Length: 263
Image 1 (cartoon, rainbow, N blue to C red):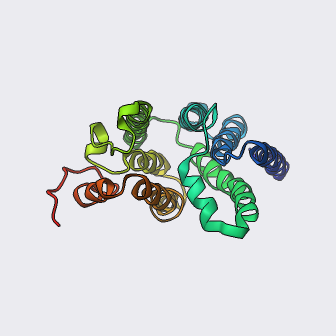
Image 2: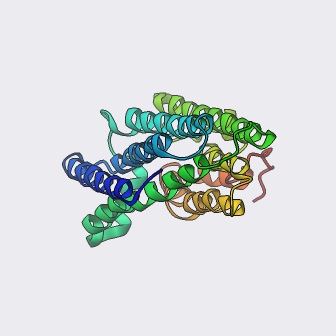
């Protein structure tokens, strides 16, 4: 099982990781490094828990594999499309402008805050791994099914967006095809759904009802703090009335049929 010594080592490694990423960021001015760092830090915790947890081996392998697959795909996507030979994501440019004279402090704080975020979400999976139930239950199959659907959905949404952005003819236009026809942020919807996958896996644990807190917190963060507000502010700035029309006809998060435009 994870001991206080293990936790201290994890915290130390995370602090070193994010200080190093912040230092590199200060040279290349790309705050997306913090998001890649979250993926690395989260994967570190999940793998360590998979090794040290007291849960049944198959469950530890399953949950650690789910967490690692999520972190690996997202981390690679961010590195390839937001960092490697790329300029900083416009959302972070908007964030910097909003911080004004507090830019340096705010960006440094954003990197440091990834440490408790990694711990909060990483140890959630550690808790799921500690389940003593050895048999494969219907709840477990449901959780895996939700995860597979959400993993595929987020990967598809990200792929559709990057293909659209890479076409010069689409500059200044709004993506309204594929999953983006039914939701303005399908990638965020499936991101939240991935965290919902662990709720059935938690059934049977003491205090299992608390598992709902993690997807709710992720939803709150994406909807009102780090995701939608920055993305939509940048989209309105760069696409203007075309994006406002998209807002009027398409759900913000939950996929649904587009509405007719009403002035």
